[in-house]
Amino acid sequence: MSPRTRKRRPERWILRLYVAGNTARGSAALRNLEEVCEEHLAGRYKIEVVDLLKQPQLARGDQILALPTLVRRLPPPMKKIIGDLSNQERLLVGLNLRRGSPRRQGAA
Amino acid sequence: MRQTRTHQQLPKVATGIIGFDEITGGGLPKGRPTLVCGGPGCGKTLFSLHFLMYGAEHREPGVFVAFEETGDDLVKNVRSLGYDLESFVKRKKIAIEYVRVERSEIEETGEYDLEALFIRLTDAIKRTGAKRLVIDSVETLFAGLQNAGVLRSELRRLFVWLKDRGITAICTGEKGVETLTRQGLEEYVSDCVIALDHRVSDQVSTRRLRIVKYRGSAHGTNEYPFLIDSDGIVVLPITSLQLVHNASMQRVSTGLPWLDQMFGGKGWFRGSSILMSGSAGTAKTTLASHFLDASCRRGERALLFQFEESPAQYLRNMRSTGLNLEPWVRKGLLQLHASRPTLYGLEFHLATMHREVVKSNPSVVVVDPVSSFTGGTFDEVNGMLMRLIDFLKGRNITSLFTHLIPGAGRADELQIGVSSLMDTWIILRNTPPGHNGGRHLSILKSRGMPHSSDQRPFELTNRGTVAV
Image (cartoon, rainbow over all chains, first blue to last red; front, side, top):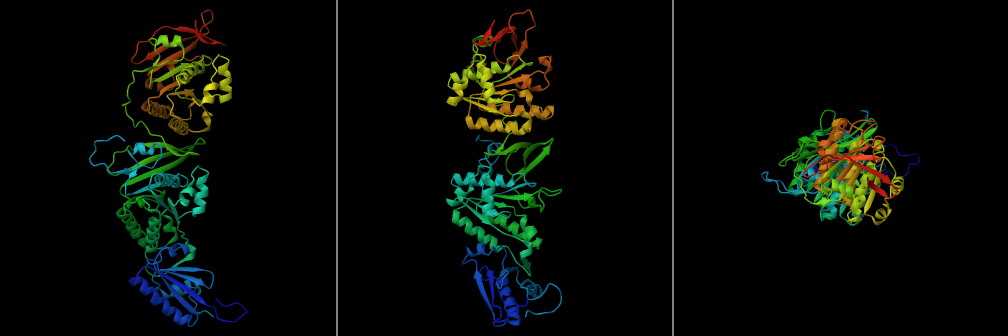
């Protein structure tokens, strides 16, 4: 997804990762996410980790069902990716950092 | 509920669905999940909601987990059926938890579970203090998420989880091609499975309910017709009552002294059923109306199901025979319920009658005429009437059914075999020319009482129905 014609500041990414307590799956998801972000979005992303055990009411707002769930809050449109994010290829596709086709092309 | 002698009856919770709680001996298994399945539009959601709202009214708040429609849509859709879901939500007696699962919006990568669903349920249960819960329909998950293996194990976990919390739950499932539900949910729910069905044949729609499984509880395998209308759901029990009615020795007047005379001077047994047969114009309706009038005079409520005339027309016609029933209608003692017999299926009629009877609790019911029920096979009509009669007897209601004998047919050639169900059978005939009276009446049978074997001539005059 390339920015529109008016190219000013780079897009800011806000990613929210929903987990429940300290689980292996949740930790793996965070690790996998950080890795991808550092590689593709270095310097322009923010990851919020939401522990639903502490804030159960937040599960309704973003319609969270499965855990872990990653929600791309910015840039729009909102995207939802579930699982431990172990498949990097799918994660990139899910975040729209890469087209669904095997063509290797990072985000601009 | 009557105590039955089966070993260790599971405790049950009432659904509030008229008829259903009777056939299951108390409702759904307490603290356990029940599967309610059927095709689209079969009434699953309504069934579940009824259960939930009844609970909320009786100190058992509930949670409705909606996978298919938003809370607002749900509230709107059931409002037309007389369910005021909103007020329960406002009073925090019911929480609607809308869970949106849209495949196109979700990307899956790696392993996951449905822990967030559990967290949401925990939260909703805590907010309301829920004792009941409905999941409608869990199969939506399979359309939205790809990993069926995870879903299956999570569902299994969900049912155990609910059981551990003592929540009485209904889980709905869509009918499969050759299975009860598309995803085989019946494997997970072992305690109680109920199948609903909606069929349309000859442009007449019928709804049926069947208890497929009910662990630890005696249940019939019959299909029970049920009804959805502005008052919600009513299930019509089949002959579940067996022959256990109390036999009253009390008599009720027929409304006509000369007719009472023919039954030992006292009229009919209270709680008995009377069949009045005759060809067209033999005053069946008039005689039946005297019976209604007599009931109202005693200050007892009477209910008339009319299948041939509108209430206004009926009241006018009765006035011409000297019978003014309007005061009773105004007082609310006499209730008229008119509908076209062909408009609905048999089940619908009988379920309607069932519900009206429960509502107005009359001591006398007249069905005029019962012969208008032709919307089924011989056995179906018979079975329905048997259920109705059983039901009325169970409530000690005296019932009178008029029956039209077509053409010049003879009474004993009755097309329907209802006569054996009746305690008393009266035949009305037009008198051949040259004899006394316009019509005459005879008693073919009357169980348990001495009765006249005369052919009694009578006439309709504008001052009443008189013997001649």
